[in-house]
Length: 313
Image (cartoon, rainbow, N blue to C red; front, side):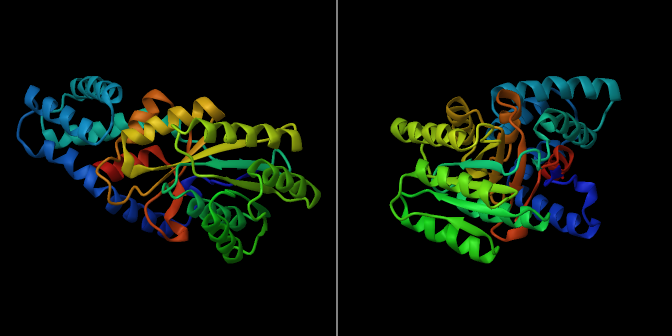
């Protein structure tokens, strides 16, 4: 079996450091609004009130914010901390602990092919993330087949075709075809050709469009007809900029499809990076990858400690 998302420590230190610098820079907007709370001289109720407000503004959500504040007060007491600057470090520890259940590598190889369905609303970066994920998989030596099941949007097929060419992988596509039929054909082809992975790009959906959510459920059912053990992974791509709206999408898609993992994109330039804490508190679905830019290497494995430290500087 091949853990595609290898632990961070396995990477070249220089590469990982470059990624961490980009992550830190990407999370600056969110982080600054929280860390300014610790510039005072006293640890008092006013500090905790300001911190509560800053966390809520970062879209951490009410439940996660309360959890973090309670845990932080306990840590401050145990550490006998007296300086606000020290409280910042303890908050990073509390945040890392809250986010740890989201840490999990994507494993390929238990099934051949491993069938991965990818969903997400239009604009979340779904097709781009599939391209980046294909690159990750290819780097790990996996053979990939792409399924262009986003048949309603001509541009989506073309966009996926560009990624297929760029990554030199095969693609199954039909002009104006039925998304479920394309998915069925791709899984069948993946089995016949001995591919390691079949990545199914499903159409961009808004969770409020019930008939379209039904289409997604249909794709899932048809994939299972092509391979009784599939889909092995159901990923949702969410845009980190959308904050609590991203959490609403996680709820809706998880209820419809039973998600197994998340890809969180566009964390650079957002002041709402706290949404991962809200997800950890309410729907702790593994975050396989996070993205902070458009380049292929800007999609990386999620590490709770790294994220907390990048966020809180």
